[in-house]
Image (cartoon, rainbow, N blue to C red):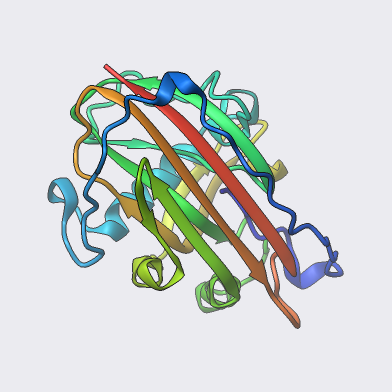
Length: 241
């Protein structure tokens, strides 16, 4: 989910009461799914990189893609592979919606791990002119400190709130270059960004069908909240060939 801080220090907080989740029924064509899929521990180095490194690489890519081509704005999976078609990365990045529920179907090659952004946030000095790096970290931290639910299901394997709390990955500051027509209306050009969130990386996928569901919610009170009330639910039907 992309939830960028939008000049929090300079505009009133908008309360959005949006917590209803939709339930999804899995199509019968997904009956022959893989039964299990292992995930890497948060203190490990999946494919030779730390979780933090993977998170930074994820955001560097996603924030560099114009909104009309960005998989983070894709509600069906139509452009789910954009920016990754020619990548040599060992992971494939899933993307979450910016609130509400969505179902996406996506075809990817086998042998890749799956990067799952269960709930995330970024804060940049481009969106908060004059903000120090410490302030950006405070904004991102408060958002993720306010998470009230976490859930992940990969085929028959369920991971609940307590299982996923340890997968919170705050990052150091890093540099991005926003394109024209960037996410959230960010102005084009270089910017310093920090990220925080809950992420999971799986072991490589073998050919087959996979159903991945992840959802989360936030209730944030006081100042410097990106969104006081927020909920997201995402379903991916992955066709791995």
